[in-house]
Image 1: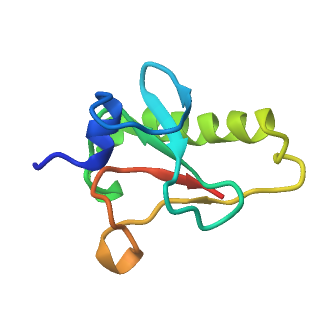
Image 2 (image 1 turned 180 degrees about the vertical axis):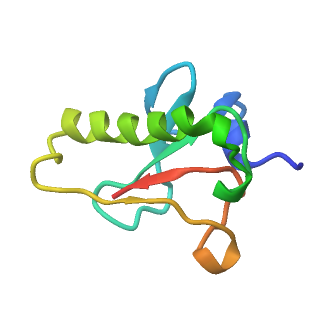
Image 3 (image 1 turned 90 degrees about the vertical axis):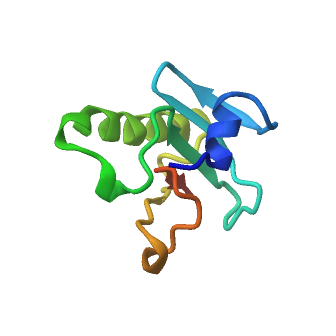
Length: 104
C-alpha cells in the first residue's frame, strides 16, 4: 500500500487547514472545494476504499459521520442542511485512495 496525501497530512508532513481532530479522525478543508463548505473527514487508520473496511471497524465509520455532524452544528449549517458523500473506487469518483467522507 503506497502512502497517500492524507497520510502526509495526518503526520503533519504537508500543511492543511485542520478544523477537527481526535484520536481516530482528522478533518480539514478541501483544497479544491466544490461547495462553500467542503471539509474532508479522514480516519487516521488507513483503508484505501470503503470496500476495504472490515465489519470490525463499524464504529470508526460511525465516528466519521458523527464528527461531520458535530462540525456542521459548530459552524451553523446543521439546521439549514448539508450533504455527506463517500466515493468508492474510480467509477465512484474516488481520487485519493485513503477512505474519507466529504461534508458539503
